[in-house]
Length: 242
Image (tube, rainbow, N blue to C red):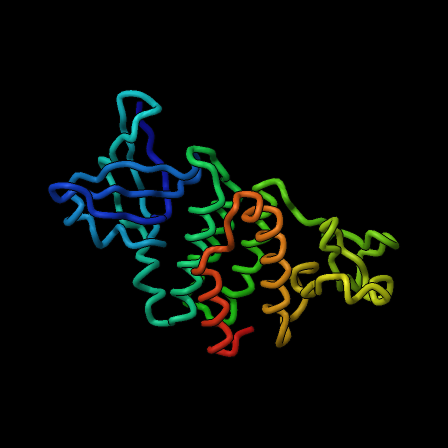
């Protein structure tokens, strides 16, 4: 059994005799693991976040298998190293994928969302916004998508400002105001793509997605959010990008 696919490196660890056990997130085959026999030689390509082309082979589909080819297409990890916040963003996105998605289950839309974030890590004013949308995409891919299309109370599609922590549905500013202490703030750019991003919007977006990731995904598994996500928020705060 064999396949080829484009992928993002999720992680790699040394194995016996110069080998490496590598985990990838592929577009068509989901989260996949395999052995790389020339682990030391392939090390530059195996940095978490890098974009590669992989060829996987095994005798049967339930075996670990091996990657006979790992061609580095974009050294994203190296490009992110010039900006501590960007590097933290790569680490957080990778940690969420590793912790949340099922192995060998394709998530093509989530793969595309991750690609958008990681290929823009050198654009400091853009990638935090893209990252916030990626987390909503992760929730949707896992079956916990939020309904930000219209106000659940009035049906209005404009001036959406709140989200119910119970239902995940949006509410407009006026209708939600009496219940503000029980609702989560909705950053305007998450409701409408053409909205400008103001100070505090990225923080609101992280608080929104973080609430649902923790309550709907990770707490059900007896886990908390990955530490890498906390470090990302700290890095963005230090860089005054929240």
